Every structure is written in C-alpha cells, then in structure tokens.
Length: 140
Image (tube, rainbow, N blue to C red; front, top):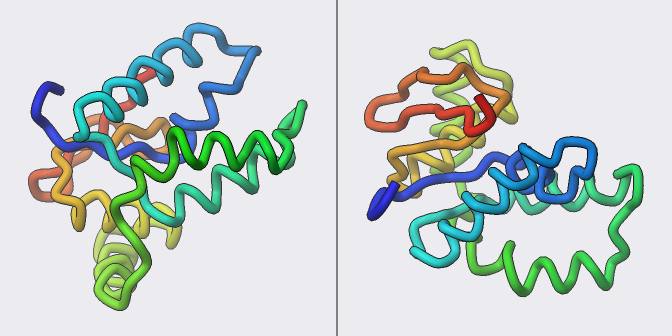
C-alpha cells in the first residue's frame, strides 16, 4: 500500500464508528490513518454524502457538530474526486458494460478518475479488476 493511491468506499469510513465490530473498526481506522498520513487515500463527494446519511441514522447518530469535526479532520483531506460530467459519463458506461449498480459504478469511476490502484470496499467482489484498479475487501 506504500505509495499506492487507494480509494475508500463509504463502508470503510462507517466501520470506524461501529462498536459492534471492533476488528473491522480497528482495520478501518488503520486504513484511513494510513491514507491520511501518506496522502494516498481518497474519497469522492458521493462517499461524503453517503457517510453523513448513514451516520445520521446510526444506532447512536452523530450530531452535526461531530460531523463537522470529522469533515475537517478526515473527510475534507481525503476528498479528491468531485462530481463532474466526466464522472457521470464514466459511471454510465461502467453501469451498462459491467452490470454494476448506479452507486457502485460511481464509486468505481471515482476511484479510476483518482488514478487509484486499490478500491477498499466490502460491497464489491474482492479481487475484481477494472483495468489497473483492483477491489480489495479489507475485512476478509
């Protein structure tokens, strides 16, 4: 992972707050810390939106003050890929040619746009490749 750009799906961020899965929380924290420390971790605007939506419905919802602090410390430094017509077009193409859901195609397209080699997600098939991008389930 050293020197390799990597993308975090929303579930990785959410697991850092999941007290019911301490092993997953620890692994997610390690990945995110390394991504921040190395400057090689990234997320998209979609991940930010999904994270906030999930955390507001969580068993113990984050307050907007807590979200604002997490935004400053974690989300903003990782936010590299923003919505754009090019991202939309790439996601549309992936959704139709690779039989991905719309949201998964946006995640994969954002990781590709960010020139990532790894997409950390438990929602996509571990080991699946999209050109140079490989899906890795960090919780296996």
